[in-house]
Each structure stands twice: as C-alpha cells, then as structure tokens.
Picture (cartoon, rainbow, N blue to C red):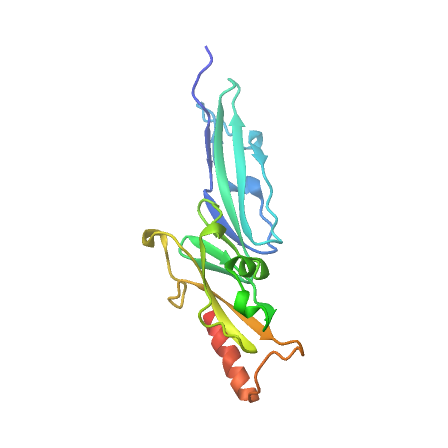
Length: 204
C-alpha cells in the first residue's frame, strides 16, 4: 500500500551573495529523500532565478515528489549584496548617490528620492519587500549648492532592527545639489573636500 508520508525536503532558508557572484541553486538543498531514506536530490524541481548582477532579494521554490505521488515544498531566499547595499540586522537597504538641481530642493518629495536614489529595501531571511516602509531623513539637505547626507532606514519593530559596524541604523547616501551653471560645490580648499570625502567613506 502506497505511503501518504511526504518526502523530506530541506534547503538553506536564506543566503547572501555578492553582486556578480554565481550561485548553484541545487547546492542549497540540504536533504531530499523519501521515507526509505533514498537520496532524491536529482529529483528536486527548482523554480525561480537569481539575477546576480542586480542587488535585491530572490525567492527560489523547491519541490520534490516521491514515487507514491507525495510532494514536499521548500523555499530559499537569496540576497544579492551590491556595493551600495547596507545590511542592518535582518534588513538590507540598497541606495545610490544622486544629483538634483537647486530648483528641485524645495519640492523634493520622498517618492522622488526613492526613484532618484533607486532605493530598494528587503528583509534578508524572508525576502519581503520593505521599500514601502522606508524612512528618509533629509534634514541635512539644504537649498544651497553642495553635497549633503541623506539617511535611509527601515521602520520596523525594534526587536528586529540591528546596527551596522559603526552603530548606525541607517544607510547614508550623498545628494549633490547643483545650479543651472552646473556648479556643484561651494568654494572650498582641496584639503577640506578630501576631509569631507573621508567622513563620507566612514559612514559607508
């Protein structure tokens, strides 16, 4: 009499890879077997793809059907970490520096910043998109030519928030404000500008 017991299918719940790194999705299978402990890894069906050239979260679906027609399912979340991706506890934020004209500053909205900075945020273990609850602190942004820091964080319960290596709970990007003559920085000494760049790198 055929068994009604589902096969055993275990995969890595989540992993993080660097942008441009390939991943063998079948290697994420921890165990695939039937109740007789036969190895069925080669029978596992994998659905989903990872675009390792683009930062973000990718969910891969695995399924395994045994000889009795019983099926088991499992998912794995793969996070692609780009050079601009900041991991904060269980969450990831990817954002890019951008430029705006001085005329845009008074009416610059959160939605415009999301687009200009290409902001993408997600939960690393689950792959859940968090972009809709991103918080943007633009209090340092001024209506003058120059370069200013914007802080980007994810508004979640404190229980799941973490800190980066510097103790910051936000990703930092730089907004360059220019005027119609393409002037981007106030007159300053070269040493002052180098100091600014070093401070900026420290935040990254």
